[in-house]
Length: 194
Picture 1 (cartoon, rainbow, N blue to C red):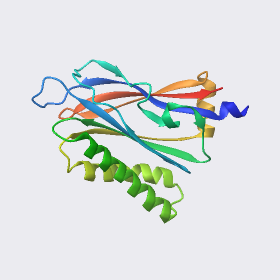
Picture 2: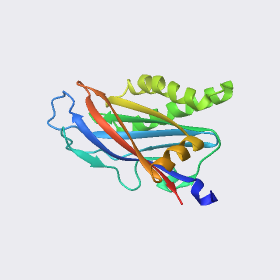
Picture 3: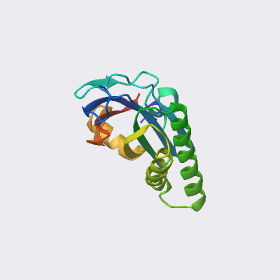
C-alpha cells in the first residue's frame, strides 16, 4: 500500500435530535466538544452553538468543525498504536461556553498526563475511560447542561480492514442522551485518503 493510503480523516459529520430536553425553552441549543489522544497526538476542539434545534431535525458540522483525527480536518498519517476520542454534547443554557471549553480541555490534560505517566499498558483506552468521569465532575459545576458522551478507539490495522470492506469510507453512528437532557444520534465519518 502506498504511503498516501496511510492517511486518514475521522470527522463528526452530522447529528440528529431524537428528543428535545425537557427545559422551558421551545428549542434546544446544543454544541459539541471533541478530545482526541494517542501516541504523540492530542487535540481538543468545539463547535458553534446550534440554535433552534427541534426533535427530528438533522444538522451538519461545518468543514472546520468536528475534527477528530486529522488536524484542521485534513488527512494525516495514523500513529502507531491506538487513538482514542471522547465527544461530548452540551446544551447551552446560561453558561459561558468558553468556561465549558476550558474545563473540557483541563479534563483532557489531566487524564492524558496522569495516565501516560502511570505506564498503563492500554493507556489510550484508559484515558478515554477516565475522561468520562473527569468531564462529568468538571462540567457539573458549570451552568450549561451535559447531555451525552460518546467514546471511541481506533488503530490503523482495524481501520484498514474495515475500510477495505467499505470502499475507503464508512460511518459510525451512535445514539445517546436522556429524556431530561435530550437524545441525539451522532454520525462520524472515517475516510482513508489515497
